Image 1 (cartoon, rainbow, N blue to C red):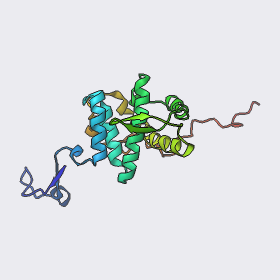
Image 2 (cartoon, one colour):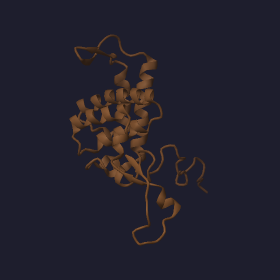
Image 3 (tube, one colour):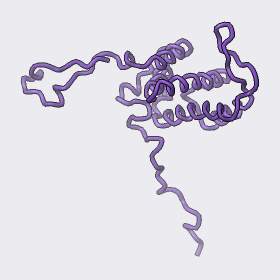
Image 4 (cartoon, rainbow, N blue to C red):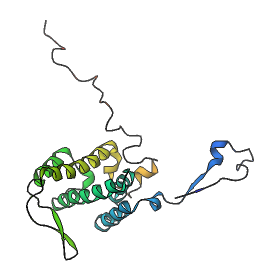
Amino acid sequence: MTLVPAEGPAADGAERSARASLAQLTGDPRDDWPPHARRLYAYLAAIYGERDALPTFAAAWIAHQRSDGTRKTYAQNFKILEGYLRERGVHPLALTFLVADTFAGHLKTLPPLVWRGGRRVPEGQPRDAATRHNVLSANSSFLQVRAADPGAAQGGDGQQSLRRGAVPGHGPAVHPYREPDRSRVRHAGAHRPA
């Protein structure tokens, strides 16, 4: 993505406003993704295809993380979840709380992944509680962002959130941390028989 200064009068000959004259957006925002987001995109696109929404959505989620260390850890931990889901025939954008909860139980028996022959393979004792917590924390972030963008599960060409101008978790959908509407919740004791 490149910002190009806007020059000259507007197309209708009118003078440009300060806001309109600042810059024009050119190029694909994915060109500016950090390396871990680009690698995750390539990994997922090789499995699901570029027309699936998952590679773009997951890579945008990784790109949105603040530090390189977080991006690296979240991408690695997402691949663990993605592999688990793929083995069970569940698309990651169709992830539900119940499936995520089953994954949490699965982590208690899954050994850590180590490099052997250029591949990461499970080996050794199951992960300790702190490591399981880190894996679940990263994937919980994905689940929250996924829940905040209901259009992501619709599939398509992987550009739906981008066309709406939304960064996953920050688009027009309900934000995952916003307090829920409790006006329809019936509290205990709110209705007492006469």
